[in-house]
Image (cartoon, rainbow, N blue to C red):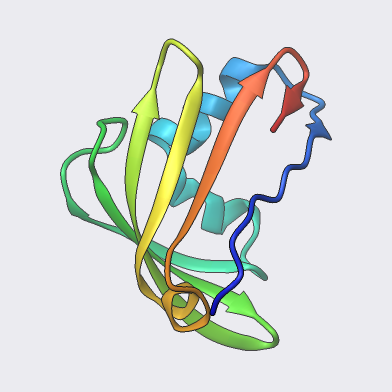
Length: 110
């Protein structure tokens, strides 16, 4: 038997919602430049930046070790929302399935 559930968090941003949304939608590869101690690399395997169903892999630092994750991006421009469905890598070793949804609203990201 496994655990099922949702974790919800809201964080106040110091930038416009569109700026953060566009960053994760169209420029995720720049995240490693902004946080090199947490994200060391990102690669697009299928699709294009800013397009739904693109497949992106990341090398991240977690627990002091470099880990690999691979995701399919689902983009909803109307809701300024991006869902990252983890389909390969470290998170799938920990969880049967996992998705992370970022929704930009006003000065908050949920």
